[in-house]
Structures are given as C-alpha cells and as structure tokens.
Length: 245
Ligand code: SAM
Image (tube, rainbow, N blue to C red; front, side, top):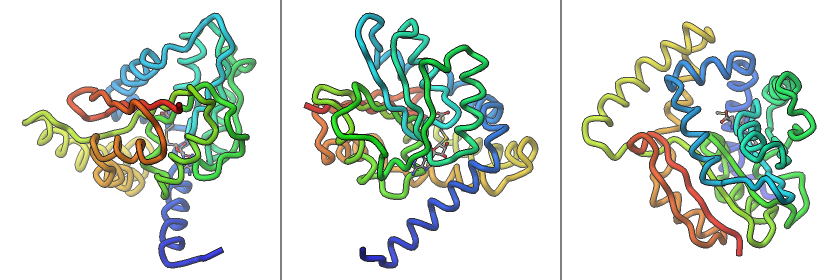
C-alpha cells in the first residue's frame, strides 16, 4: 500500500481524535448537555423523526461513530422496540459507556456495540436499512471514504442520515456562536473535563467542516440519490439525507 505524507497526516488526526474521546468518555454525555444547553437532544430527536423507523417490519440500523449510543437508543424507542441498532465506533471507552447505558435502559437486546472504523466498516455489503452518523463524520479523516462505506453497507432503498455541526446562516447568531464556541466551550472543557485543549480541537474541527451545500455534493458523489438537508437552530447543526437506489 502507498503510505504518503497525506496518510501520515490523516492517521495522526485519527490518533488525536481517539485520544480526545478516550479522555472524555466517562463525562461525554454530561458535557454534551452542558455545551449544547440540551440542544443536542432536540437535534437527535429531529434526526430520528426524519428517519421514522417502522414499528411493524424488520429494520436494522447501523449507527456509525455512535459513541455512547444516544441516537440508537432514540431509534429503538421510537420504533417501539422493533428496530435493531448496531453502534459502531472506533473508540472502546465510548462503547463501554454505551454498553452500560443500554443495560440500564433495558435496551441491550436491541442495541449492540461493535468496534470499527467508519472508513473500513466490518460489515458485509447491502445489509442495513439505514445508516446514521451523528457528530461523527467531521472526526473521520477521510470523509469521502466513510461516505463510500456508508453506501456499500446499505441495502438498495436504504437511507443515509447525517447530523453534524454546520454553518450558521442567521446574521447575528453567527457572532454569538463564534464567541460561545471559541471562548466558552474550551473554558467549560477545562472546568468539567479538566481539558481545554481537546475541546479547542473539537471547535476547530467544526469550523473546518464543509458547509451544507458542499457536503450535500460530497454525499451525491458517493452515489446517493435524492440528497437533501435541513438546517437546525439556524444552521448550528444540519441534517443531511440521501438514499441508495
Ligand atoms: N454519535 C454520538 C452522539 O451523537 O452522541 C457520539 C458522537 S462523538 C462527538 C464522536 C464519535 O466519533 C466518538 O465516539 C469517536 O470515537 C467516533 N469516531 C471518531 N473517528 C471515528 C472513526 N474513524 N470511525 C468510527 N468512529 C469514529
């Protein structure tokens, strides 16, 4: 295999992301609530509403970069415990917290946890009814490769849904958001997780992520049809949707 400069750089990025999530895993859910002021719950609910998992026919979802299981739990609840979800994440610390949460919620029969890399999913082609990824894809070094893998593991007719921080499109809100994310988030990271640097990295990764239209174009390039998106809270986050035909 070729191992060029870009590979080294991208692998270093993955290493840094892994270190961040190993460090914060036990406090991750609390930090999410604090930093988004609870908004991440509303955004995840919007994602699951758009997915509308059925309650009356077999439905299997792959929740990539699923971390501590939040999106999967919501999907299973919303389907009245009909759906099965696999949380796939590269980070064993996050998966461990997720497994404990699933047990506590009585969802262990519906949600399973598998270690794996979004760029090289350990699943056969054409298996899943849906692929979800929430606040995960911007951490993946080769986004085009992750999108290709999403396409591969879906059944024909399968659904791709991505929730990610995006570009604020409301004048005024963008200034407030800059102030909040560049100053307050690292400070909260220091106070709660004892670590401002990790959170500064996360904020920067949000800034570098492609805006709504460009990301939609990348999803089309991976082969998906009927690609569309919805802004949430003025574009602080966005939901992208696509179908494998
Ligand atoms: N989806 C969950 C949520 O919304 O609460 C967790 C999101 S968390 C911000 C990002 C997750 O992406 C982390 O659990 C991290 O380990 C995972 N991740 C980072 N790079 C990954 C990769 N290459 N493949 C799979 N997961 C990855």
